Image (cartoon, rainbow, N blue to C red):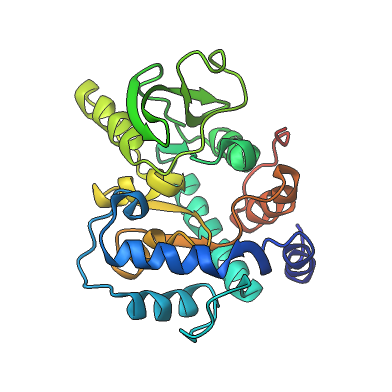
Length: 276
């Protein structure tokens, strides 16, 4: 298993933690939009608390390690690698518990270009451990807002991981899809399972709307989140997201491989072939 020290060094070298590519300006803009209840950053969460900008900044300083100083308004944002390691430990523990119970699980990502390999390897290991890796609503239509207007997308699965792709963009089964924050795909997927009579997932693993959308519906969810994704951390603070791991979610795809190995080791899951 990758040691904690080696993981910490990798997080900093790959800029998954420490100074990251996400700018302070991007993060503060997301906090302002969240405070205004903009659905683009709520990711399907319906917050119970007031969560003003100051509240969010304090929360993100606690959860991620960003600066709590409101006068710090520019430059790269910062994630504390110790918080990332602690988050990955908690993430692995939830996978271990689900594997031990042979619980049905659902994997989904809004970052297929970066994180598909991370989730696909975990999905393969959970399947090998006896879990039912669910693939509901394959091919279902999801009409989602984009900067070009509403576009028709469809739910697809690659090695057990849900993603969405715009109609005609790529053939089904190809290892690319659309970047999205929308909670609509997980709502449709869970709705399809409920309509078919189950089983429903006991754990949803992913990011963005897959995590917040599931958590809002009462399904246990864990995932990865950047400093400009406050919804997952609010969800964790309010008890609707079990684990939110702070890290940069848009670095090179191969930079997540050591994290996969670390999580597999901590969760005591069988090693499967890494993807890609």
